[in-house]
Length: 141
Image (tube, rainbow, N blue to C red; front, side, top):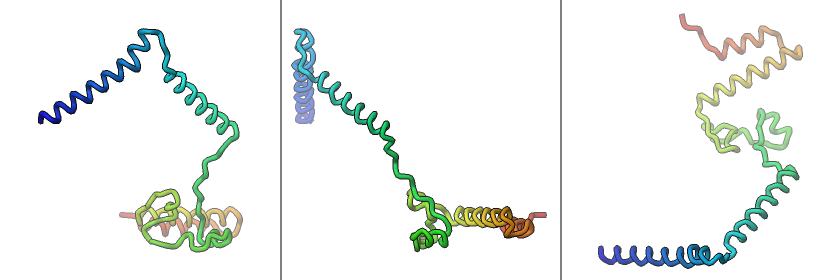
């Protein structure tokens, strides 16, 4: 224990000597070591770089939103919707979804698909209602 205590005392003494030599004495004598100026120079260069980057409009890459497997094949993304059944297409952004969430998402996508067809006149309102009923399941009594 004495070794640890003496080592801590030595480290403290070195730290105190550095503070006195680099901060207190130069301040008392009105001398600058240039540390503040160097820090300000680095800070200004960093801010200039950031300003230029913002002005140029550097955009962060957006995560790719995947569509249905058929749409992916049209865009050359064949097989993007395949893989582990417990990982949805959100794996590009690092999010894993549960099986229940996958089913809910698939149901929402199916409702949207039929709704869009209905609005284009390629499906009937009854088709849309059937999909909604199928997804909601039987109503409790």
